[in-house]
Image (tube, helix red, strand yellow):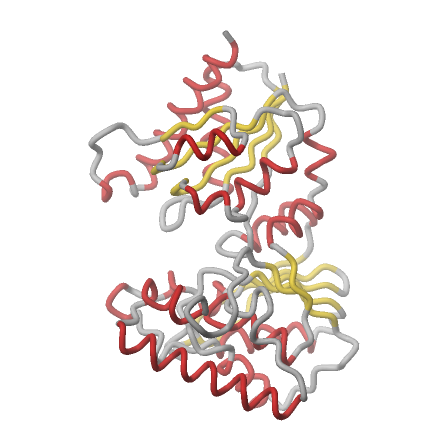
Length: 346
């Protein structure tokens, strides 16, 4: 029996690799002889760098950059030949801040710009940027400021690709500030200010360039960093999961599998809107796909979408703070997957 595991990170709890490892242990408990293929995955947010490193190898390069509050922080990006993979959460991520420090009114994407500059100076010709998990809502102004401060000229020959599952525009009621800033610490008044700031920046930029990419898919990703890459770097947009699955040759590896296990922290109808498990389902063809999650709602819609099994890893009544503990989540994945494989073997 061949089982493919491709579970997204459980944000704030387990990385994709850790979740996969726990699922593999659960499989071995129930079926020791199973052939297990583990694939760390990410749609552009946390774990994007790790997933690509596992898939293509390369050299992890460590750089001291500025975090969202302009404090020094160590961040990594991946170099392989003339290609660089940047995960913006390394420099501009929400997890770099305590809950009390979250404030998109002042958080900056400056550190992401420093990562770009370092990659450019290394002679890269293609830079893939995973956009997700940001603490910022500055429309990428901080990133552009860092590039400007460095006096680094980015050659027109460098090709940028932004990878994200976010299709929102830069501003407006579906834009970066309205949709994402509240979870980064913004109040209602902050959202209005941030949205207007982004709109004004886009208008000024459009006058300079003679075109406007603020309404394109991905522009609202990572607090508007997507827009800065699209408008100023002429980047291409690609859904993060599509880019990764193509890179790791997922379709080829899954075609002879008996079933696939995927998952994420919370599964609901938003899962169906291009999130990672949906990408896994679509690329698995006729192979049954099992979905596990820490919290599940809209179960019937998920089943109708094509998931063969849907299992919550947490026992009923568990306190959230306990469920989020790494050792607890790990054991719950082991138990859930072990029980699931036992059922599948019957």
